[in-house]
Amino acid sequence: MFCYQCNTYWKVEKILCSNCAKQFYQGKVLLDWPIQHDIFAQFLWIPNEDANLHQVVIHYKNLTKHKPLSKYLINLEQWFYNIPNYFFDNKTEIIWVPVPSGSKRFVNHLVAEYMKTYFGGRVLDCLMKIGNLEQKQLPKSQRQNIAITLKPDFIKFDWSNALIIFIDDIITTGNTLKACWQAMSLNYVVSWHFAYRQKPKSPLLVEL
Image (tube, rainbow, N blue to C red; front, side, top):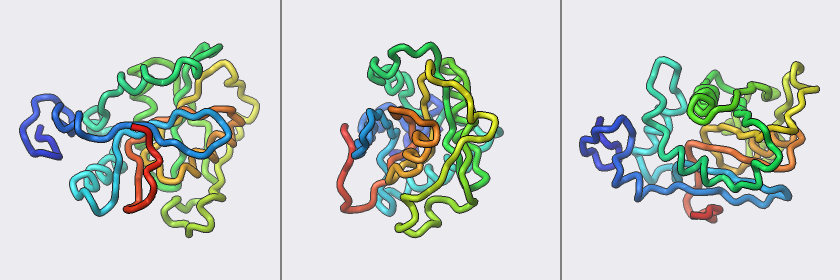
């Protein structure tokens, strides 16, 4: 296939060739939270500044099980094995939790299943969003109040011995992710995101 960034032919089925992958941003989003967090974003996405990446994000968000997923996932081993060891302390398994969406998109569930196959563990689809509006449809004043809760079958579920890793497509403010860890009563957050959406001229809350 062809690298979406430089348009050169790339023999490996990935959206970026090796040279462009080295130049592209991958890092951790730092948020002002009272708990330990390791929030990884595969790409830094600044809307209106990279038309190619914008199209890739759209295609990614609308992936189905009938379309190739692996070509969108870059350097998974580097991300996973750089998660600080203290998150794994006293944990006997990994649980991948897809972040619920207000739309009919399934990409978070597809990636969670892929991570399970790649790294082991299991997938728990245990969260649901209250209401049908997507985050982007809400006014700014309401985005901090986005509501996510446990599905009834998981209210008494014990995941104290598991490392919970959230899977979500885009992180912007972190409010959806915050609603997830609060719903599960966690004292930490570990998550993987396809992209960190940064608005032009806004502070870069990222550690490279």
